[in-house]
Structures are given as structure tokens and as C-alpha cells.
Picture 1 (cartoon, rainbow, N blue to C red):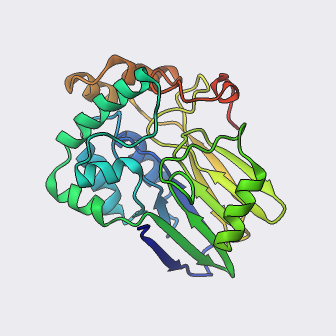
Picture 2: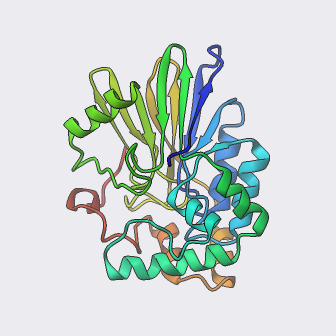
Length: 267
């Protein structure tokens, strides 16, 4: 059963900040928290762990900063002790690296934080300035559904908007940031903090939404050297390290459709 919560936002606030997929990249999380420190409402759309080192560090950063978090597939699997990340990968190589990542993250997430992950909602509906925004991880139908810009079906997306009676859907699971306006509706993939957007740049992305319902992607650079050093000391695969420096998806990339696989600026 889907656990969905409703939040009424202060109409005097002019914007909210949204991040996705921290993937235990604590340096990117620290930079996001610094850049958004003056924004009252900050949300994380799930997947605290994965790829990066010391998962408890990322969780504690989010919790201490008061970021409102929902549960991604990774959070569910780590929290409830599932056998894998539930990411939805089908390629053997993708599944191999995803399993390495999951096994490390589960082993290194303490019990207190695993219990906290269990309590997170699956979706959050925001009521703000007479508008409604749905926050989810993959899609309103499934936590691990990949919704790609090149393959998105407008009819299916319109159905999601009408069924939920909302004006905007914000998600993260597919990892590539994009925005699509459809009349009065907006689909907003806010990207991920944990790794670059396969554009040959080490920058990552997060999202900002104004009370006028304007979605804006923010590119962010950060110092990833300390994370790479911790990856090395923790014995995480060199492919995870190389992704942060090269700006390319060196693992779990076989899920990408041909258009998203192209190396190009995302904004």
C-alpha cells in the first residue's frame, strides 16, 4: 500500500528546492544544503544511498538539515533488508554493479538510519498557493519506473496529472534531468546529486520550483575529491570513482535509451 502524505506550504514562501538521488555523495549533499540554506522548504525525492561511501553520513546530513524526504527504491530496500536495490535494471552488467553498490550500502547503514528509512512516505502532495505538486521517486505508478524524456508518452503523463488532480509532478529515478510543459501541467525530473548527468561534465543538478509553478534546473559543481578518496579506501569499484570525474555513466548505463545515451549538455 502506497504511503502518501499531504503538506500545506506557507503561501508567503517564493520557492522550494528539490534534490534527488544523493547516492551517498555527501560532498554534493553538503554543497546543495549550502546553496539552498535560505529556502525554507527543501525536499529529497529518494535514494539516499548507492554508489558513494559512508551512507550514514549522507542520511545524517539530510536529517540534521531538516530536509523533507520521501522513500526511493533504494531507501525501501535498505530500510527493510531486501535482497537488492529494486532499481529496475535488466542488463547483467548493470545488475552486477548495482548489487555491489547495494550490498555495501546496506552493510554500512546503521540500524537507526535503516529504521528511519522505513518511516519515509512513498509520495508527498504539496498544496501551495492554490496549486498542487506531487513528489514521487519514479512515477505515480511505481517507485522504480524509468520515465525518459525521449520516450515519455504524453497520453500517459496526462493521465497521471488528471488522476491525481495536480499541476506538477517532480521525480528523480531515471537520473537524467529534464522538464516538459504540457499546457497547464509540468513534468519535472530534478536530476540527481549523486552522479553527473552523462554529459561529459562533473556537475550535478537539483531543482527549484517557484510559487508561480515555474520549474528551474540548477547545475551545481562541488569538490568531489574527498568522496573519491573515501571510495578508494572503502574498496568501491573504480568505475564509480571515474563517473564523478568523467561526467559519464560508467555503470548502470545500459538502461539509457539511445537519445539519453548521447553525450550532450542537459540544459
